[in-house]
Length: 317
Image (cartoon, rainbow, N blue to C red; front, side, top):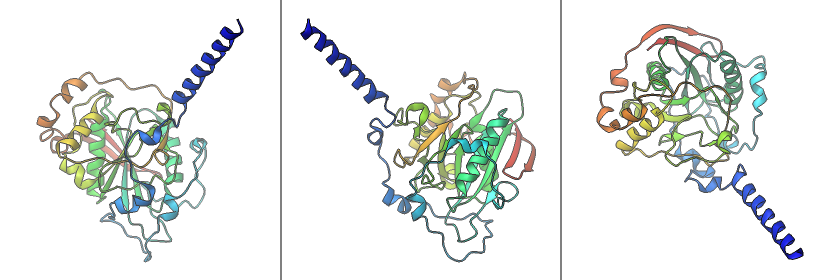
């Protein structure tokens, strides 16, 4: 009897141990993908300033202390207010006052019907980004028609606006994702970067190696090279895989930072409708991408408004 009792205890402990191993947030996170080592990040960055940049500082910004910042920002910042003297210019543009930045970034956020989430996102992101010594501007591209949500097309619309303003780096950013580590530099690497590879919803583990959604950094030149994103994905499904296939067709490899730097918090919300066409559109990405994307982009720009924290583009798709 005693032997059988000990055996049961042993198996219970074994099961609990296995569950802890597989459910732990950091479980094998470092081994899920190849990444750029922290000490090599600066050498991998794409240094370029926007054509319209008018900063007056002479000394270049140093990013060593940004990359080796070990802090984690609290998600509760979404409920805070920006401190006075934040120096964010009309349209959501910012650059550091004490040095000349090496990077200019347009952050493009596709959006519809999430006002409270958007407010929290903007406050959080400006608080986060002002620590990084990057010249940036936040574009919120809102779909104002009644058709199913088209995230990829909205990103194309925002990319066109950012290109007109001369931004060399685009960050395609979902409104429900908040970066937790200031060391996750909001600038482009020489290769397109999957920035949100470590999300709390997935226990901070990359679900699959070809995942390429959420938050993406890509140079304007590369985005033009692949003809942007598809305009055909009405609904929330498939457009990220299509983007990955476009890069693959052009033999452009993606990159990532290590999981600890790439951590994001996903805000809980009701999902948009899923795409009916997703699988059908994906089946012929390589044949279609030359004629479906930036080159075929058609929309009506209802209005563009420069708010204190963002540039608001309202588009009828």
